[in-house]
Length: 248
View: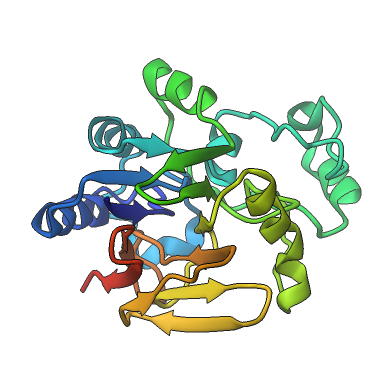
């Protein structure tokens, strides 16, 4: 199976349309979206033109075979992740004033103070509400686990940022538990892609690389226009290869 992987669209309709055209040229069998379809802040000020949350959701619904939710998606519909208690988020989180959420968060959680208004239709709201936090994808020779971020925060709701190999240990254990050889994640807006196993962290950028024959995670780039590069990934489960492809 040739699997295209997109993530972190952030309502950027221009970039999503471009990515889907490039993916069509790649003749992929399936497309997976790793979340953050919607939601963007003022830090995108240089690229606000061409953002349309509802249109992006419509395109994802029409083109993607597998979709999981990201932190911005959850925030857009005011839905808490299933593990919100572990993050210290009370059930009435979205009813609290910002100052109270700041007090509870202690700079640990994303508060979306600069999030731009981009109201969703009822259909878009319902689509996001039904998205799972993870999916197991059955490929030709192995299973793949799709999440927006990594354990213990697979939706990326906290501001946690992995700093060393030990920080990925929980996610690698989750791969074993779900009987998945490969994990796919986004959220980090990388320059290209990275491959992480229990032995090493390798930045692959936009080079074609081999999959491993042991549990490992692949983190890919963002679709959205942002200060870094943007792009998508191709995962070839027959030839055990993956590659991040840049969107110019």
